[in-house]
Length: 219
Ligand SMILES: C[S@@+](CC[C@H](N)C(=O)[O-])C[C@H]1O[C@@H](n2cnc3c(N)ncnc32)[C@H](O)[C@@H]1O
Image (tube, rainbow, N blue to C red; front, side, top):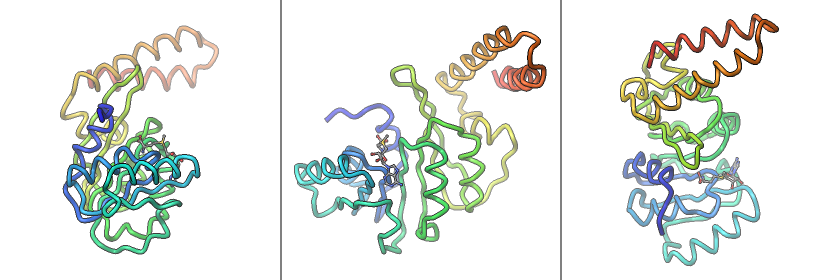
């Protein structure tokens, strides 16, 4: 089956591992493909909503990979497995991702964490790096006009400044066309908002002007 560009990028970020947790597995596309490509010996496809979970179970059965892909109904916190592992949390908002990371008993045995969030990337980077992770890779992509940011965190420490946290240290180094396009669109959006606000709200205007200057320095 042809996977979306977004799922392909996530798969490309998975280093071959013993165990992979796919939290928020939905119908299991990523979990099944990760096992099929031998990116993990064993995959836990974790889903906490009944409808998607039922489809997940059916899809795993159809895939012929039942021995290596296990469907779990829940959030993954109930799994007792202290082997070294990688975890993917994709398609959830930053608040949910951070909440899962904060509660995860398996942080000590976690080598790599791959996340895909469309909201509040700065908070995501700030919160996850508090748990002794650094940013090993990043990718910005666009599908059907929506921008997605995939981040690969690995165990270890690195110092990041405000700009790194806001836009991503690897994004800033790579300067991919999509990343720069996303920033340019934000500048256009800020210009539009500034015209609308006029001189009604100086505090908001000043914050937007500062943000625009920061972005223009990157571009
Ligand atoms: C938008 S889908 C993303 C599916 C897939 N990961 C992807 O990126 O294409 C999010 C899925 O995560 C599930 N989910 C949300 N919070 C969860 C949690 N704490 N534990 C397990 N699954 C969760 C939802 O029920 C939904 O099926």
